[in-house]
Length: 201
Image 1 (cartoon, rainbow, N blue to C red):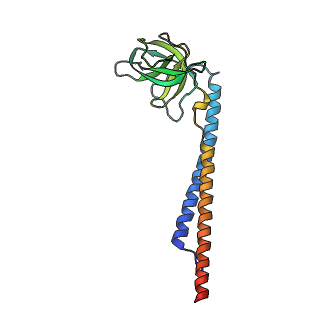
Image 2 (cartoon, one colour):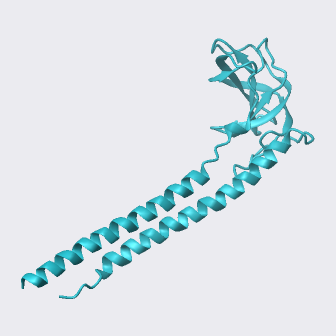
Image 3 (cartoon, rainbow, N blue to C red):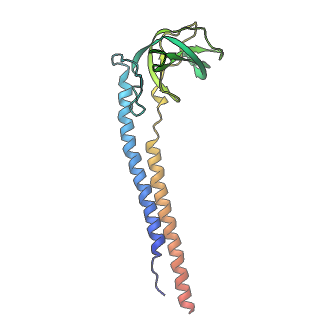
């Protein structure tokens, strides 16, 4: 009996391996892009302030740039676990601000830090700060001078920006290698079985 390759399974496995390699290469490209982005972020603190974006770009958000927000009215508060500028655990108080007209765009402002989650008493005003990542709204402004008797929240850091693309690339390459090894071992076992059957016949 011949030891022909199982054509359909071989095509399926090779296609899967090629896809995983392609994903690994894509992650390497993403890692290069992210490294360049992090270099830009690292230099942002030395750059002049910018206007706070009304509609932030989630791909190229201006993280770590200095900016300011004129909070015309506080329409809501949310408290998230956070640290103070000196590293104490507690609550970061984020004001949801109206910034332009009754129906205009808003801004998220980290007004400061405290040990309790209770909403601060603050009606709004001009806040200077640094643009930071926000899980809900892409960006938020972390006040450099806290308001309403709050203490300063921990400023944003480069460590807040995930950069796992290299490890993801390695994982995809490993998956591709493992899939190929498993296929070759299975093929070897199949061929041995075919050979034994031929000898018995």
